[in-house]
Length: 128
Image (cartoon, rainbow, N blue to C red; front, side, top):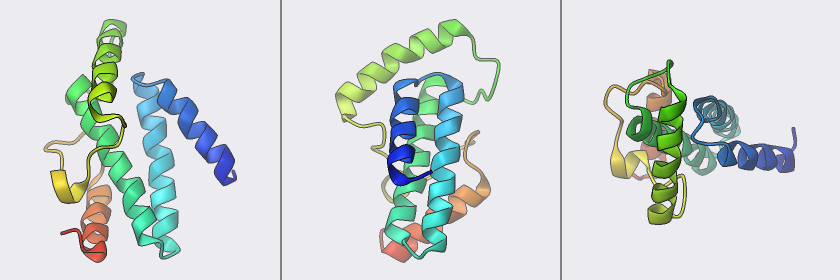
């Protein structure tokens, strides 16, 4: 996929939030992009992608708590209202950063490796 296709896919997935499947698909894309940027030495870009993952996980936990599955349609309907209010307040889906907000306690979406990358990249960039 080229950059335009990736951007288009991300925009389509963002429009489909807060459906749980699309959260997870966005996380997969950002994880892949973050790893690729890190491998290429683009640490600022890599940290941006990992912080996007952190933001999505933070929103997930505000909407669905620690659930990973078994989310009912009514919960998704309630999450739509939450997400609309969130966007009105923050103007973005990605307001959180590891340096400013730290890790999410008992995170059910990000792995220990994701947090290791967030820690290392934040230190490398000089944000911690």
